[in-house]
Amino acid sequence: MLDNVKNALISSNLFNKSTSLLIACSGGRDSMALLHAFVSAEFSKIEVAHCNFQLRNEESDGDEIFIRDYCQKHNIPFHTVRFETSVFAKENSVSTQMAARTLRYEWLETVRKERQLHLIAVAHHQDDQVETILLQLIQGTGIHGLKGMLAKNDKIVRPFLNISRQEINQYVEENKISYREDSSNNSTYYKRNFVRHEISPLLKKINSNYLQELSEFSQRMQESEFLFNEQVEKIRKKVLVPWKEGYQLYLTYLLNHPACNTLFHEMLTPFGLGKEQIKELLLTAKGLKKENASGQTFYSGTHRMIMDKKSLFILPLENELTSLLTYDKWPNQIIFNDYKIDVRLQPVSKVNMHQSSRHAYLDADKINFPIQIRFPETGDYFYPFGLGKAKNAEKAGKKKLSKFFKDIKLSVAERERIPVIKSGERILWIVNHRIDDRYKVTESTKNVVVLLITKGYE
Image (cartoon, rainbow, N blue to C red; front, side, top):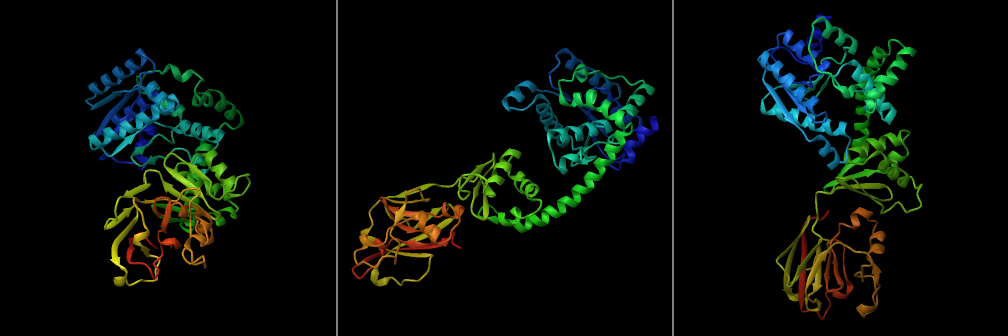
């Protein structure tokens, strides 16, 4: 048994004796077996890290003292930290176990970097792996959850992942390894403990070799995930394309795909949407909700998603946009988010008018200050240049911006990103699209405001 456990350190191909490691040690049976195995195998470049989560009062303090004494005896560098775990869990609305996990791994990585160590070794074993898979399955998961834990995940290594709890227990007994017993391990209050004490014994009655079977299942799922990810990435490149500072997700292909639900999950999870949000979004995209899908907006903690007829536009929340600029006189240049607009005031005799959406020519003497540039708002309307035939500009065709945008076939996401320049309550120019007919240059015009987009046009 000694050779079996010690060989797990080398046969895993996760590291060698020249690798420097930070060993995460709780003081319990499994982590003390891992630490003992490293010492017995004469790994010289090891250090130990212990988290005191302060959840078991004197018992937690006793664990810390126990490991400190062990490290002093074996001349191993020792690091420890105390966390207000319960406070962190409450402030972040997570379970105590999740809080401890988050605090633990963040701190371990901090210590690893500070000490310039290669890897972090943790004592998860075969039983832990099976319990993880069962928990993921019971709580709902896909192929990513069914693969379980990886033997190597970035800087985290698990050399005992193919060693059973029974083998570790025998190793501890044979070598008379001292350890600390965590009283909470016997409680079925925690889900993992319930699986361990109640479900696993029942599975063993069905198949006495279930640990090995599920361990091999995990390996198959890891390989299956590799193939799955390859195919998903091919589809991702096809349907998810850069748009502005975010992305445009083409919906038609996904909605017609036999794996529609899975693909939606894979495309949207990276943007912070949860399982229930993705379900709601998918129902909206399929037209199974009463509300009109076009224009529906969904939020995650990091992104805003705007539904259009055939696309979903995904924009990061962190990129706050300027919503309004006001000028008491014409500046030389207007900079509004992605747009740069050069401004010139010229006598009409010196103006050489270009037929281009980048240009706008306005009768300067008809414009009142202040001037504003902002995004469209509900109820906005203007009199599109060229629409009316009447000589009186006030009788030219009035049109709401929403109808104008629909006519020129702009998506919902595109509409809300197009600036409009206003004089008082009147729109002068839908930037990069159309001026208001009331401010066009006529035979009676004397002075012209020339606006030229130098950045932001397509």
